[in-house]
Amino acid sequence: MSEICKKLDASISKYIRPLTFPVVVKFVKEGEAIPEKAKVPTKALGYPIAICQAMTIARKYGWTLAMYKEDQACPLSHVILGYAEEPDFIKGGSVIKPLYVDNDEAAVKTQASTPKMPTADTQCIVLAPLHLATFDPDVVVCYGNSAQITRFVQGALYKVGGYIESRFAGRGACGGEITVPYSQDKCNVIVPGGGERVFALTGDDELAFAMPASWIDRVMEGLEATHKGGVARIPTPAAGVMMKPAFPKYYWELETYCGLREKG
Image (tube, rainbow, N blue to C red; front, side, top):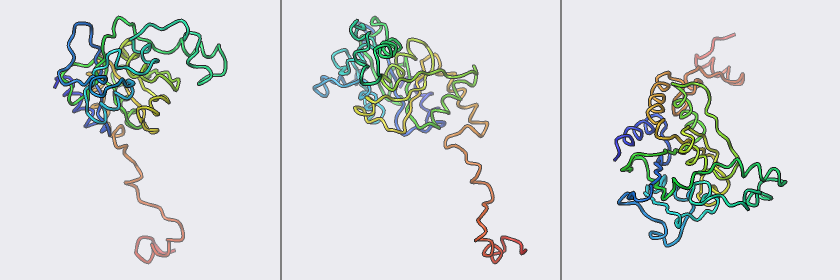
């Protein structure tokens, strides 16, 4: 297990407590070897799958997967993740209108704002559960509920302040999970898209947080420090659980009888 992955796994397990494994993402350059136990979908399954499906398999089943171009079934992700150059015909929004927008102008605007990796960086993408990763990550992605993602945001901002600035389009979430943190070297909050919910069974209550390798130490330090404050914790501390309960007036007579309320 990679040393940095070991430390991060311990930090996330203690302070975030996610229901599924955090996932390590690695861009394997041409000539580099993939992890020995990595499963290649076209060989292990006999057919390609979408990157969002691979993410779910890694975070729920604990598989390590190596996604070459021929293993990637989603054509949109070919462009977003750098397996292929963006063709001119989709720059006009042909894959967006009428599925997501009403008019050509909106379709062009949405496609132009879709994150895209340089194709030179993508030979193969490896995904592995954090606790089993034998390699250092380029990106780490963790799914959780809104409270858990809030804790990641608090940890990431502890040293630097400001805001986590993320963009959402309801589609192409793999760009937010992988392309943005890798190519822009920034943490990102992701609202999973429709395709990920349909094909990868991402829960309707799930969000995701992604961090590039350069932010890992900063996030770990921030999670520990903000946890010590006592308010920013998982599970979220509920003040009401330590307060004296107030019952409606219909209970007052019984409270008096039990010595819990003064007469009068």
